[in-house]
Image (tube, rainbow, N blue to C red; front, side, top):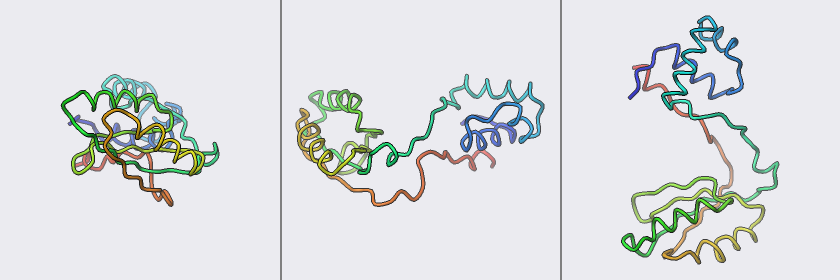
Length: 158
């Protein structure tokens, strides 16, 4: 676990809320002058703690009204199916995130599509036809209560 001081932890908290905040404002909010704040910011990037910055888009505003979590179970793990599945999923624009999982299913996908018809086409004509896919289980998102995004930092303050 990285050893971060209070300045760096506060910097990360602030940047998670507003990644476009200028270093001069960031420095003022955490109680440092601009140059040391800039050095710490660069060090956090070089250490890989700050991975990058991106715009957060509204899926609904861009026409993606259907959001689902899809659990996928493979037939086998010894025939190259996992690697083949991962490569295929990485090329699917509808899949915003993919995790390998323990338990009954091997993968969990976060999928966004414009309509239920598009979801059906994605599941039946693309996902289920991938080599090695045994079965899928979908869960429709009714409402996003929290997330995505915030990485908890309270454990660093102990």
